[in-house]
Amino acid sequence: MNLGEGVTKFLGGVGRPDASPRRLKARGRRGPDKKVGPAGSEPAWVQTQGCLGISRPTPPQRAIPLSQESPPDPANTRCGAMERVGPRVHVKRAVQRLASRSTQLAQTGGPLAAHRGSSWRRRFNRRVECQMALVSDVVGSLRGEEAAKLVESNFISFWSRFDRHSVQPLHSVEGVIVISCTVRSAIFNLAIATDPTVSSDVIRGVIGSFGGLGVPFRWAQLPSQARSALGSKLEAAGLTRRSASPAMVLSLSELKRSHPAPKDLSVEHVLEYNGLKDFARILNAADFHLPPEVANEIPALLRPKERDSQLEMFLGRQDSAPIATALRYSSEDTVGIYAVSTLEAARGKGIGSSMTYEALLDGKEAGGAQHAVLVATQLGFPVYRRLGFEQCGEFVTYVPRR
Image 1 (cartoon, one colour):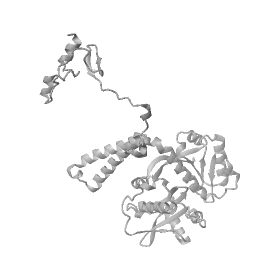
Image 2: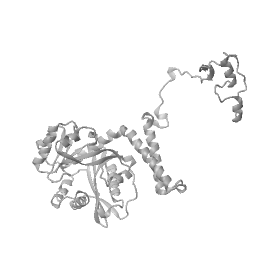
Image 3: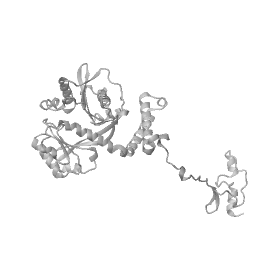
Image 4: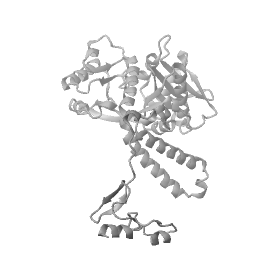
């Protein structure tokens, strides 16, 4: 008996140091009944490994003819077409279910919450937040660019409606969209670079043209331009960064109410000019804060054209008094939400969320839109998150230095 055969016999022919009959009996399992035969009598699939020649069983590999090999049919798999996307989608779905469960426990005090303290819920929520942040980084690359393009397209189309100088050479600048009107407010006068590689000379020319018109303006940097050198060029041309606003997107198939609407709130379409004046007055008092001589020009700007179904305005009332506004603008299969505002005295009651939901629902039912986009403010960001919106970038605003 050589050394390899002796070690193999001692190990019970299994090839594991802890698989002797005595140890298997101590663990409640039966050891091998057969004695190990002489060397060379093992099955063909037992291979010798290691410097001591210890025999270890290796499972046989079943050969599959090439004619039988075929990729799995996505329609017959458990996840269907999602199998082709990869594990990222499955990770996101799992974390979303975890977050939904955490929210349910925190809000309704589910069965687990009855047996857990507040410290457990805090740790659980913290875990969900960390995992959601990780998933945002992983999944963001899948649809971040596409979602940002949806927001940018609707944003440019909406603000272009307010242009009143489209016949001037100012608007034929290569690589820059210039929107200007008679209202002396930077809200309605803006420049947008369609090409982030636009030259510094063109940027200075656009800034000088606004100066010639004598109106304040802003330059909006698009989410897709965040990694470009456009911001540095704007600052070198005399502009300064003023604010950054989250760009958000929502699949309308996932639209849901964050909480019930206030019982005393009524939402109506703005159909007459008197309603339009109330809309502009509430919007200015709650958000714009423009001087009266400038605010009086807003109704004429917002007034939709005849048979224009792209733009719809909504006015919220409590006890017949207007207190809130919302506007939806449809382009292609996307609904853009703008001008969501609530008077300060009426905030904190879910009115802004209800106004946004009604505008989204109207856009979904009117044109069969599939996505909703918006540019959030600091106050509105948590409201939109509860409605299901996700951030896909940010708009950065630049204004002239004072």
